[in-house]
Length: 314
Image 1 (cartoon, rainbow, N blue to C red):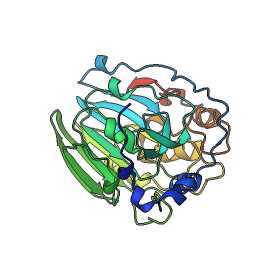
Image 2: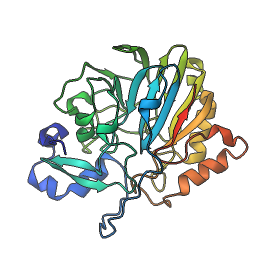
Image 3: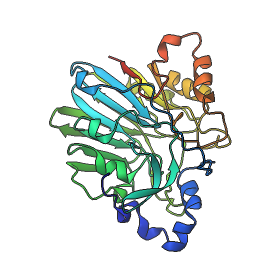
Image 4: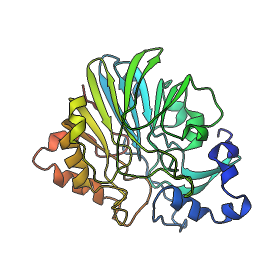
């Protein structure tokens, strides 16, 4: 296991040992959640499939859901990873381990199974989206695009560039495999990692390359996505569907998520942010069941259902 660097989690702002003893409050403040802290059930579901990125063509858009909000994308030869959470736990990194919430479904790929990543997108600073151990373990020397006031949380490793974006900011990222245009979009969430650092930003992203575009919703409650239709058409929308009960002010329902993707004009729907961590009170399988029902008239638009699923979207 890679050495985890405690200082890069923002530990200086945690308040020392007393805050570590109250770690549950820290995790909850960083990611609104109602996790089960009963660890007597150690069973972790395996991913339903193991993606094989080495076989993906460079003349297409292929993506695989690795779990939670982590999606591996080959965007016409450029390798992109969203909100990487690759290890068995999220939380505070303490030397060689992480103290915090355990995942209930394994990540579909280990860091060693990933290709060399060109671009990492981080939507906000919550522990389940900005995981420092994962960000330190990504292969390659990627560029990082992050929400405003979150780059200080990056682990000490070599990134080719680091850019923070506020809503409506855009940047062209040059990678060894080509250029990618990234635009930050407004979502309805919040960004504090420790509860008091409310200055931190939160965002979704539009990713464009070779005349094609993807929409990555990050984390969001119900909000207006119709204005993003102008930046499309979108081959797919990667949208959160879980952790809405009782956190409806921070996380959309599956029906709201589908409606937002529809408003943006997305052709395909890729549900994320479910089946990984027990963040809330709804049944583990409820989000995807409700998403399937919401798209019952257009079932072919729901192209990913299980962790490890792979789809070619363009």
